Image 1 (cartoon, helix red, strand yellow):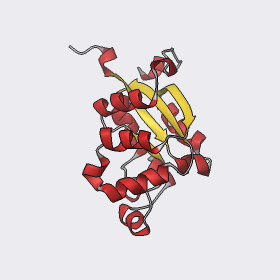
Image 2: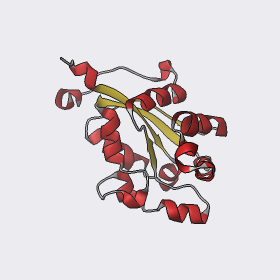
Image 3: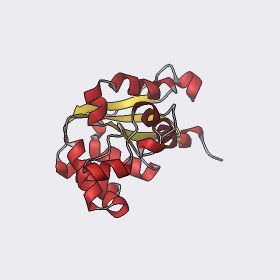
Image 4: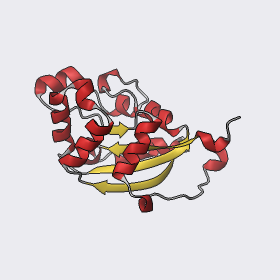
Length: 171
């Protein structure tokens, strides 16, 4: 029989340059906190191309899935400003974060999701324009990916274990 701790997961979330530059960081973070997810690590960074290659291709296989051109557009977009990297923890956090964020392509995202409420671009439009898709947030796709991404973006001493009051009601 599974133990309750088997359901506690950590997920990487990256608030992309459009989130930071539009000044909606607080609104986006609030979405995660309201459902009881706990921030166990957070920092503002300006990653270089090497980190983005490791993140989007070595782990996420973006070139394999969408092609070299889409990868290049995305990296150029990600390097337009600082990002905020966070590690969120909670009950089945990886799929919960994905649900809150919505699908990768903003035009497909339902209202009520972060992408559905704050963005609307399509892959076709961004490809025709020659730019990355400003879709506000990166969220780990699965548990294995989350573990690799967290290790890439955070050192162990940047992640914290603590109790918060939400856990009484969300765990």
